Length: 78
Image (cartoon, one colour):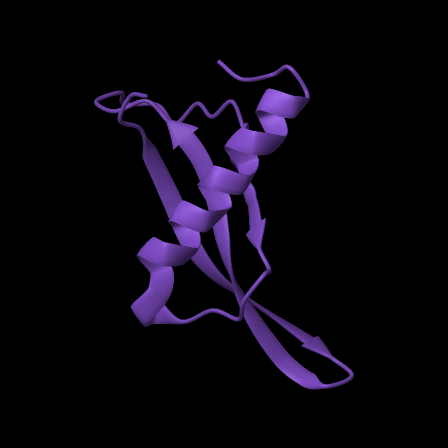
């Protein structure tokens, strides 16, 4: 429910079917702080769809929604 900062990366992995790229998310980080201290609650890889720079916002939103649901089920939601 509060604004936080995330770092987004394109991660490419070479497999049997060639190179596949996905959106990697690191965070959340508090806004306005000098040091980068993450609780890693939302760090991970969005692998439901291949990386598409035109869909980064959609992929991030889907990843965060999935993560929030998972944390709620596990009793870890803040």
